[in-house]
Image 1 (cartoon, helix red, strand yellow):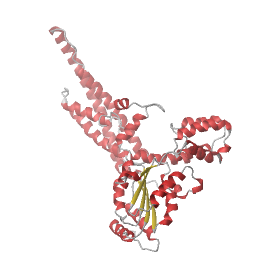
Image 2 (cartoon, helix red, strand yellow):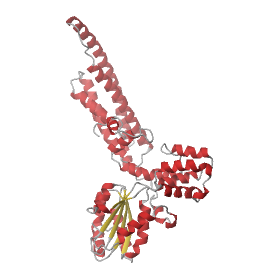
Image 3 (cartoon, helix red, strand yellow):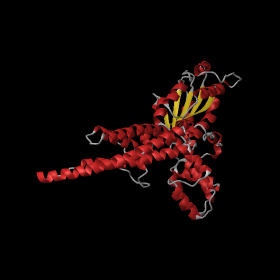
Image 4 (cartoon, one colour):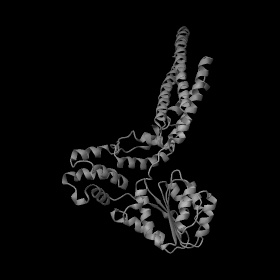
Length: 449
């Protein structure tokens, strides 16, 4: 992805930095003052580029930060336009000369044109230089670096996985098959430790399924624990929670206990126990490696269930038993309809005839994702039974739904997956958004763009 011109995080800054470097290193004739100003632009923009990449990793941005980021991106576009015009003029300044006399004539014309171009370039670069200095001073004045660090930590939100832990089994749809398969995997007679990885998109029902298996199969084990990890895990807090759950009885655990003490305490307790541990929503291999240290490998038939959105993490957790990586499938069309109509009308039979066709179209757009079906269903409960309202909702799917608590919750859950992407993949996603819905994208065309 090194050749990508426009980045989701930095706009055209990377492309511009390459052009500025080429301008300084190439055989472009310019006076020392202009060369010095361009070198200044390159150094300042390099620092700004680094900060923009840092901003891209923050979950939420302050209004001032967003404003500053947008201004820097716009400046980069303007500077690139100026540089492109200058480089283009330099490349095409010497037309074919038919003879020596005409050659002298063109040489004089080019000198005049070149002087004008250099002067114009110098004026524009000085103007842009002053704007960049102003942007740098604004950055320092409002201490934007410090705001980047606190951007994600200021808002305290409810864990979106909590509702999944308290769903009544009778209200779940399409879960019986996967639940039975997983229960068979964790309750067989194999005595060696077995790690089952549950893989699925955000909102596909991983936490709900893992919790159902945990509730049903837990009684067959000596001890059990269910912990959530998340993108930025507090490993010490997770280990404390696991230890307190498996010990059950009053066991003093100091908040100051370090990771090593917690790991050793768990290993000592689990050495002769058949345990069931669910590690929900794990994002990194490093987090798994640390938590795994506490889970002693014994011959008591112990089981670990890991849920993740990341295939690499899933395979790492169950390695070398890659057959234990269980991919959660989308709901079937029949199950999707049951879930949707139950959420909107209370049952399938209560759907009005004039909404049948549009309902099928909406369900299809949800792609069998339980979170999407429940969210859209919840949104439609606030609408009238007029077909026009439902058509508007259908048309808005994929283009930005209206503001609604259910919709905002879905966006937050799905944004976790987006935020976890590398900057290169975010850029690739940006290019993919250029294509129409249901369009078959040719790889060569995407790479060319």
